[in-house]
Amino acid sequence: MSKGKRSDYELIQVTSGFERLVHFLFAGSCVLLFLSGFGLMYHSMSFLTALFGGYYITKYVHNFSGLLFGASGLLAVIIWFKDGALFDQDDILWLKKGGGYLWTKEGIPPQGRFNAGQKLYFVLKAVTWVIMSVTGVIMWFPYAFGRSLVTLCYPLHIACVALLAGSVIMHIFLGTIGNPGTLQAMITGKCTRAWARFQHPKWLREYDEKHGAR
Amino acid sequence: MSEKIMLVDVTKCTACRSCQVACKNWNGLPADRTKNRGSFQNPADLNPHNYTLIRFQEEESGDAIKWLFRNDKCFHCTDPGCMKVCPVPGCIYKTPQGAVVLDSTKCIGCKYCYHACPFAVPRFDAATEKMYKCTLCHDRLAEGLIPACAKACPTGAITFGDKPAMVQAAYARAQALGGSATVYGDKVVGGTHVMYVLEKPPAAYEHLPVNPKISPLVFLWKDLFKPLSLLSLLGGIGGSLLYYVIKGPKKPKFEEGGERHE
Image (spheres, chains in turn cyan, orange):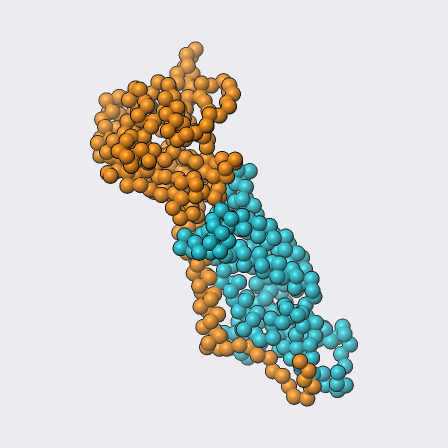
């Protein structure tokens, strides 16, 4: 470590091992649910059910990855609630400016551990996690519930798919090739100082305060 | 292979249950142990081993009891809700004669069909994890035979034939009966292939919806949110790729002065 100015290439810990475990359990369940769910929803995507070994198995893959989704989703909501659910003035301004992604690159307010877009994604995931889990259980065991309640769950479940499908794809894009340096934060848990200053300057300030900035 | 109608004239039914027995016989369905529930109706409801059933509805007038008999089974809708929601290709299909067939061997037991059916007909067998219902004896129809229940009916309460003739016969019979006799089936869910001549208005019969409809929630599910979810998926993929091509990645700037160690 050089004594003077700290290197932009210095790797600093940005996510914990537990966070990454929860993330990939949740993400894995989502991938399985999307593949099996779209296979069951569209006759034209029957190749997806063939992936699992037929419709009968696909139904159970969907059911049981739903259990993983429910459990890992609960952990995700708990561990990221503080980072993801609380919006400040900078976040609102960030959203107004589209995060610098679309119509402007100027005057993007500094962001904390999650930027406002990630917070929005967290809220969407948290809300749909509740709806998906509740409607999913009811659809799995419909005879334990009333006919009209079950029938209401079907469109609710698929409305959440409509909200999630595009958002998840965007999440994957933004977390990988859209923002180089981001993926390793979820793989190794580390990011470069330059990346942190560029993406999450408020968080980097907190980090340096905590770890004794030099 | 013209479109057929099964016409059930409830006024001719004596509740002998030949239809129930013939159905079990043709479809190879096992007998169920039942119990006395204080009614002659047996079994209590349609179930995976009983595709058809005579409902014994009791009406008291003074000291006397009058029965309303009704042969109940799948109505074989022209617009079947069950087929609309079934996730497995070829599991529920229509035949040229108008039968709506549920191929239980392909069923995965999701129970969507039960909830989308305006008449709540398909039944789940927990032992096999599959749904079952009347097939209008589509296998007999394919051989030029009439359904087993119609074949067995001794009073002519269940008849089977070409659609125009049967619809005409239904209205003629209702008119001949007079009073509040009505025809049921041809004007609901795109026209059913099991029709009734009822002695009384439909509302008088238990378990018979006056205006059967596929729930609007099913249309919301299958005709709005389902295509929207595909649009969302493709939009996400297309949008991301387009963004990457036009605007490219957002790269952090690395300043000089630091020592590089990767």
